[in-house]
Image (cartoon, rainbow, N blue to C red; front, side):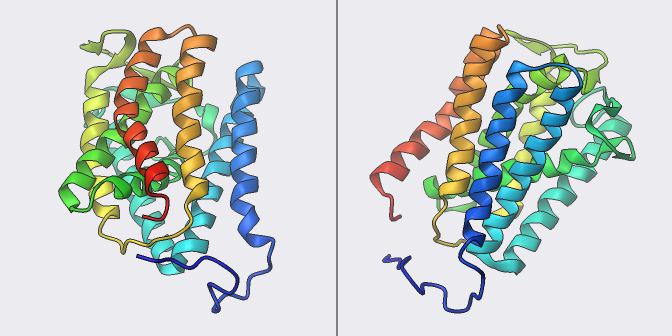
Length: 264
């Protein structure tokens, strides 16, 4: 398939020339916030956490709007935010599917016990995960399976880091993954189940061929930076190993596919 991306490739757009740079600016802001996050503590960390989530969410949403149009973007946001919020409310209220947990007030305003920031974090990460696995798989089942593993593997890094900051707490951990203490195994199984469903729903949206450098850099940053942070800054080699292997099982083949077949 030949894809023209030069001048006047989108004649229906009257956007100013600086608009396509906005996702890059937001992505850079999110990365900078996460770099500084490691170097500070206390309230400033809470602020930087919120800034990074909002920046990554904005980068994903605006990039989707620029490359996949308004209808696709609204559907992607509706599915992701809707599913994540319902599942989080269900989880906080019933302990299914993640286990016994509750959020503190560190992440800002809440609705039904769930910080409003949480669904935005889901949406920011679901977008690059979806696009990555769509480069690796064509059929819906394989896409959902790969996407579920990729998206759920993000929580291998996220949960230990956020729990250590007191953003949410766990009750009875029960069975845990060796090397990731304090986080119930049920949580990761719940993430897998939810991620399979979420990616399967998102994959029903029309596939588009576009320049996806912004989500590609975002996903690559999340992978590399979390492995390094867990290993070097937080002293969690178990977290680094599990995350590097499981997320890497999808990310590394995706890197290869993107390098070897850059034009699809």
